[in-house]
Every structure is written in structure tokens, then in C-alpha cells.
Length: 110
Image 1 (cartoon, rainbow, N blue to C red):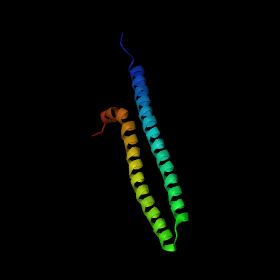
Image 2: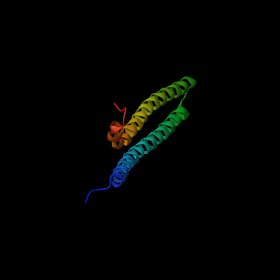
Image 3: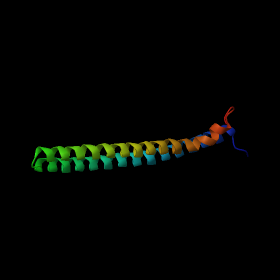
């Protein structure tokens, strides 16, 4: 007894969709965790900088604290943006993998 081609295609399609969903779910969770961790650290850094600012004994020291905070915040934001961008790229690559073999079989695929 042979398997109906449409039934086989439907099962393969479901398998691909489930694999893609699994990859999406795993990567989306990693992105959410990264964003939450960054937000927590950013809040903590802001609180520390605010305490230093309150304790500044002079205008020059207050400006120094503010400058250091802004510089480190900017550097951390750039690094975090790159990290999250890479996580999104990983998500796209992993979600695409289950469909790659099917797409390569299509006419005109290279």
C-alpha cells in the first residue's frame, strides 16, 4: 500500500512548520531574555549614576559623572543592539532551515 503524495506533502509541510515554529519560539525567548537582562542592567546603571550625581560635591564632578554615564550607556546600547541584531539573524536562519530543501527543489532555484 503506497502513501498518497498529497498526504505525504501535508505531513512534510506540517513537520517543516513545527520545526520553524520551534526555532522561532526558542530564538524569540532568547531575544526576550536578552532585552529583559539589558533593561534590568540599564536601570541599575541609571540608579548608580543618579546616586553618584547626588553625591557630587562640585559642578565639575557632576558633569564628569554625567559624561561617564552617557558614554557608557551609549557604548552598551550599541553593543546590545548588535547582539540583538545577531539574535534576530539567527532566528531568521533557523526558521528558514526547514523550508530550504523544499525551496531548492523549486524550478529556477539555485
